[in-house]
Image (cartoon, rainbow over all chains, first blue to last red; front, side):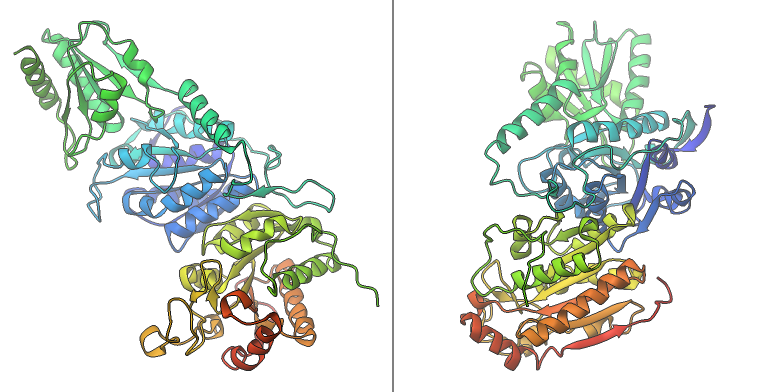
Length: 351
Length: 247
């Protein structure tokens, strides 16, 4: 298929349909509303179902029903609305259901504002709701990658019978870029035997529930599932890390400024590198094993006031190097600022 | 007359308390599915708490939903599998307290799902605390001196909330006597028939006893329904639309 110009949110919505998603429900919130607006008319064209729900609570639980009977289904939200979905996501994890939830991140805690920000890293990678769980989190940095990861998200969800979160942001969701979309295909709702469909007396019944105290092996099942995901699904992009003095660690919209910072710094003789996270969980610890002995420090670059990546970088490097943070929840990172901060960090380390 | 219990209602032991009416309700569901020849089409979404224990009682494909949210979940089921019978099984706390927004909007959208609300006037599983339907003066662990309607509001009647909406069916039955059980079965069956005809939202509330939390014997609980509960919650059909205008 030829390239077409599309907004990140619309490319995400169209891609979902093309890989067989036939159920969407959601509630308006900026900056993700284009996803539901697009699907409100487009879903019917491919014979799917669209529901504008009364709340995000309703949406996440409606999604649970659609997924339980075998549909490829997703919902999307942002910040406050995504918070409202956390109880439901916890239930969906406990029920071993595959589905996709998109969070187009906006600014701040509370109401905050509608601009790009990356403050939901902790919420998305730590579980977000109650209980022992994590979810796979995919973080696109542009429109093509939004489409690629959205297409893959359903396969990953079904492979592990586990929800997958897409961590987009207002910039990636709103920007327009060329994109090649996958071909349109259908998904068979009877593909997986666990999908509810009704049963005759004497048949083995199917139950989607979220209490497992009767299953002695449940904890082993959980440990194995999470270990498999951590072993198999780490994704990242490394740039110029072979001889880097300092490695930037970033994801999403911020990582694009980091790429420019690496280029500009190197043309001025300053050896910067970048690890761009594509999966936020599992955190790509394998990427850090490839870092060179010449690396003296790491710098997290994210649209966050507190520096939410810092702890995970420390853990991934065994606390062997200083880790600092550059970024604001209210402004896109600046290339010059990234380089300046990197130089200051190195000076401190050497000093 | 020889009684044969519905095949899909398992002969396993249940976890229900003595005198609980869930067994009666399950028998009605089972009989109706057999009469409508839809046993293999029923997919139930239960709430948490007492209703969730049905997963070991009946042999229907079942989702245990989140507290108060079985109605949206049941709609998700129906949208994906339009030929199934999608039943949301709730209690009064789920449907009228925490999940009232979902109940209202299912009715407003006229979702093609059946809601069965077992109303025992308390939050039974958690120890019998006050719910939206607790009777005036009724003592519960959270209204130890009896429900004070000045402070907590009056008992909630679903017909006052959705009775004027464009829905397919709204009725209230009881299980306090054979006569009422038979009437309730007719209501439930009508709801399922309308659901299968695609007419839209059907809600049947069933007044049920909770001997454990009411502190009454099973028999006295049935008497309590007749003498105390029914005067507050009138039985009958409140909406029975031939054909809903927006179904």
